[in-house]
Length: 326
Image (tube, rainbow, N blue to C red; front, side, top):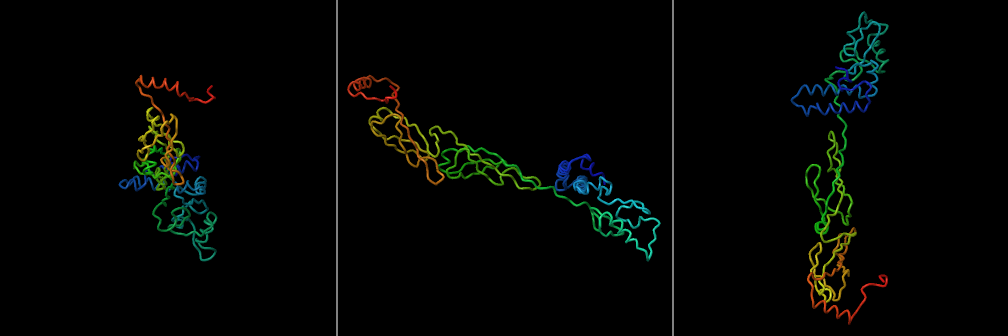
């Protein structure tokens, strides 16, 4: 087994965080599931696991640095009458020792030596030792699964049409996966409000849960309507004769056009209210549509109209502006 620092490619002064990052990188690269037909990669994966088993553990790392255990986690011993045996097969490594019926057996001496390091009863013969892999039936280093981590959240801006808010109550968004889904808009949703789609964000690492998607609502500009809270505002152009004589004028709304009755002698700037024709509210109702009348003069000059206006000015003068304009 090579030096665990060398296996993970880190210096002996590396921090715990650096060691963990190096291990995760190698584990991901050489994992057997990713390299089923590459025995060399599987061997590298096993080496990385064994190395992390040693220097990824604070206590074992300290023991290794002090020379108390080897790269496989087996104890190293130096004692009189022994050749520096290493755990397994230790009983056969003793020189010049003869077991006797009295005065203590070889197992008792081994217990004294091992007790000084691990405090437990050591087993003589094959498999004896203290450290990872000690004991019968060991076939390799234990696999330590990399930690799971949650994926990042995704930020999405949804451009919502006023028609969708009123009619379908839904909008379409494209997720980080490329999938397009319909998102239900909360009642009375406001511009800038965010909707959370749990588990629809970027995938997590090592099988961890996916992050969330945060959908920020933005209203698409409308060519006719201006949004103010849950109310809509509309400028409605009128001819001079519609304003003077009154008329029924086809007026657009988000749910379809309606006939709006214009009273006779209506002034430009007059506001008429269409109840319930605005945006949905949080209480379940709808705001209103406020229609502002705008008188539009004919683009062509008219001698008769000019004559009428001159007579009207003389016969029926009136003030259009208050005293604050004087």
